[in-house]
Length: 582
Image 1 (cartoon, rainbow, N blue to C red):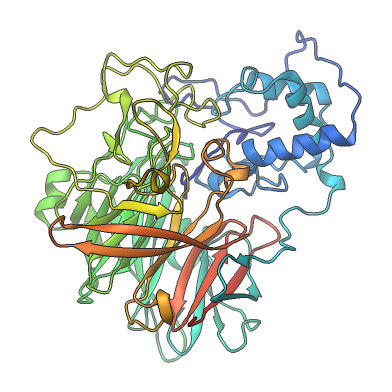
Image 2 (cartoon, rainbow, N blue to C red; image 1 turned 180 degrees about the vertical axis):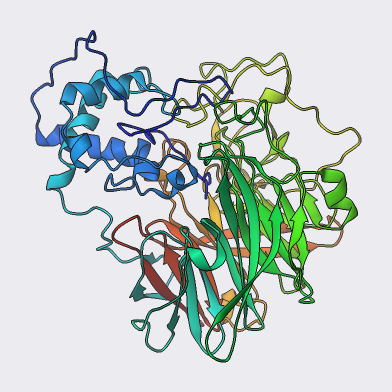
């Protein structure tokens, strides 16, 4: 998802890790992070409630997307990494002195940056104070506040609790809802009695250890994701098809496996995710996200030297729906000749849908530079810009005379996971393909989710206030949960429209916060197709807010079901949204 689908900063704080410098330089692997005896640790100032409260606010902004809101190491953004984020409530962390924790926050190590220049000393102590109080607080992940509608023609009710680490929800036959976890468990529940939860599959059934894509068609289940290899330094993409026989036994068929390529042990390693059956039912589209933030080198401790993105990443593939045991090599020419490659240059198209006319739509997550989040009409054979262009803005690292400096470049945020190691002068950056014309982003005319940085001044502006459009959503929104009312069953102004969720909450994100305090909300998308422009105009409206890490949605008849990630221990919720005719 983001991981970025998403911001990760204190992802390896106090943890047992193998460190990596994302630019490709090897860092000595250690079994633990021990402060040298020669370091004189500072003394903790007097702790008061104001400091703890301030630390909590900082924690939500800089740490929660990786460590989770309650510090248990279960933030969705950290799940892409080989070494999982530390549980800050654990005995080994809580046994450390305040000085040790303060030192580590200030110095940084490996993937975790130094916070010495980003946070003043008082703020770093506030973070220490909050971390030391985690076990004395009520579980923060427990969602005690219901999401709320922002419009009168909408109702939201709690449908059911779900298990932790959920990534997908979809409709099954016989009036069942299904959902899956990133660890590979698949569940179903009857819509008339959601408490009758039944586990249908687990990891051993399908072998996808990092599951991110799921859908059903004609009673068959399709799953996609990744399998780790080479001592967790490498990965394979995989898709399976599952049938259940009359006795209820699951028959699993591997549709494809990819060649091995390198993981990165960073939040930028997005993997194989969204699935969408084609309009004619003969094929299935599958997303393979990028393995880098913006095209930089990510070699995973030298295991895959000089690796950036490869032929198998940052693309959408089209696979025959009855395929069996295909091998997808890391060979762009082969993938094109066989017709498997559908579109290129999409960093992390975490969700897909078809519009009422059968056109394929995707919402795409940009990187840590302040580029907008794209939405595309995805067309066969088109290239959509990544890594050279995202959100209508060029990636500066492609130019050999660019030297990153946040004091001069407002699009660089020092709170980003990619700063400073992944933004660097890079004369070897791959050259833009000659003669290629990139596919166009859908233009958003607001009135919501339309903040952007002026590319000339760096000033944050509101597109609809200026009477202009932008491409497409506010930076760092992490759009997902894309659905479309293709059957025209929704009432009133919702009929025939699309909807999407924003995963990121501006109040909790160092990257999104300069733009907005909004997020974790539901957007109504009024897409108006222009034959002349061969593209859409988009009008975006916030209609609900207050979700907690919403990761997916499914439209069933006249109701939308939104599911939450739910952390590692407590689990999230499914919310039922009913639309009314005003």
